[in-house]
Length: 368
Image 1 (cartoon, rainbow, N blue to C red):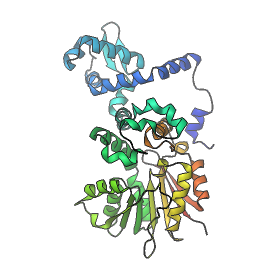
Image 2 (cartoon, rainbow, N blue to C red):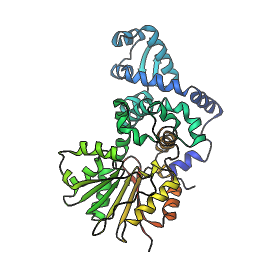
Image 3 (cartoon, rainbow, N blue to C red):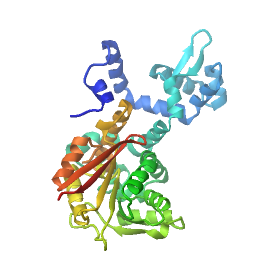
Image 4 (tube, one colour):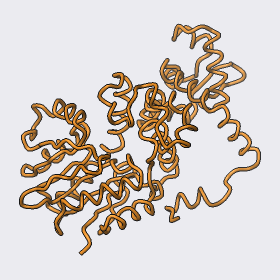
């Protein structure tokens, strides 16, 4: 396994003393309540109050400002003190915000992850064990009877949809400006298939960036309905077409484009499938390619991350795929993705790293 320098430093040698390791073990054991207590400190604005108070706040002052009972505030402040999100001045019993608490309310990625884990994943995590054993998203059942979350996206409760799309778009959107430069300045793309285009956000970016490009979104019919509603009336929408396809159906073929196709875009898409399914999808994509066509696979490959925190978030996200999304996919590393590409009869031409919040773009071409 090849690891980035930061990950090699973190994952190949013991980092903690025995006492630190014991505390982390207990932190894990109490992880669910650590999460919920911290989420409520965010939701009820207690962290914000502590941040804005120059001299900190007493428990009584927090009660007055929030309307919460003394019991509720006492439980949350004492838990947060031990979690490490607040600090206390013993002489005055005044509480203030720690660095960790500051990140919980100010780091956009952390806020997105909190909402995603509470609204989308939290109840489903209880069924992680069965999901790993059965290869099915057993935690999805409390939302509905769908084989994967993607068939059910349009039917999820509004707040769950908001948190799901918020998570999905937050990470991909940060990479869009650099991705557009790679595709349209380095390769001069004029025709593009956007595979798994969701709400059409990337397609709109493309037609807004290049006045000549034509984009076809390939996705499930129910997703395409959401997409059409989202792009209606937007600049360049007339150059966005759609093609309904269930990519889990091995008989479903990519459309052939008259005159050839320049690019196939797969952003945060292949991580939604098992390795066997990825190979099958790439083989079908290959049929629609010419020697000039390139596939652009944009993924957050966990082994290529510059910062260890990013790798942590990505490997945890793999378990969302297990319990909620589909039961058999994950956030892959480079070795896994390279194996799928080779098996599909394709080859890697180039890899662009460190886009946005940790994306890589793998440029793929047909074998001669």
